[in-house]
Image (cartoon, rainbow, N blue to C red; front, side, top):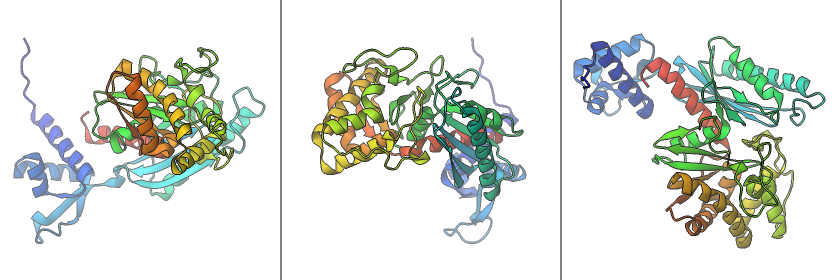
Length: 421
């Protein structure tokens, strides 16, 4: 028999405080009257919690409401955005992008740190030395960006990286395919006192961004397929990101599919789904259809590839993004239809196992294809799978990893500062 538990006064205060803080985060500055109407709490309770939150440094006066006459009832209260500062970091194969934000998630500064040479593997000549310099430059850029934003220290940093992230330990499983500086950068960030560092797979962060601020808002179930240099997926079921026992949920690059010359193996995904829809495969398909492919156009850290299976980003990703965008603009139907069928083959495997009801095409290539490519994938998927599945174009775009990192860092910081789950 379970006995009902009554909340203690301190527990009730904590619940009310968190409720008010969440409302201020979501809606911006509010009056005491607004808070009473939104929470259903009494006037004395709201007055007490506002006084308590002001003493804690989380809430401060933020002007007066133009809709009310001057006086206590018109006074606005808002979150103290600089109570804590956050950072999101996107580790790519040939460099790093980062953003510094305040407690509300508002961007205060950004930086991009390019590798001086293509990022070498750990056993490549000069690899460790070049990697050490990149780690040092990245930490310096992070601290300089934070200082320019007025942040004395960073409360929480969320990092998106390719590879498997162990859900139990938070460790990056570097199988040797990833540059050694990835692991060294994480170690350097974690060595800084007073800053919590959260590591997450980059495609999972992109999925978080699409769920919270992108194409999958309002969905409790969906799968994101990331289309870039490499191919990955993130899965949200019952409103929660699913990582799997080893952090490998979404390793669809290894999915065996028809149309390849062999099968993938545990060391490489060359003959899996990856080999049919990666940026290199898209460029090859475009050339076969007589479309001009400008290899190398737009290459750089800003368009560096992502892949759960590791590997160095190639120039094909910006070229693939460009050729898909041109194909949509010019109505290259045969190319788009064949590409859509390839994507639908992989999507169907996700759908018949998980039945997410919605698939989002993310990454630079998914964004370039837009609703035109998404619609074609949905039509093919309808023929391949008995389960009704909507296909949407991602809207968070190539910055989805950084956006997801800032959201993740903000959630963690607010859990500590606001209390509760």
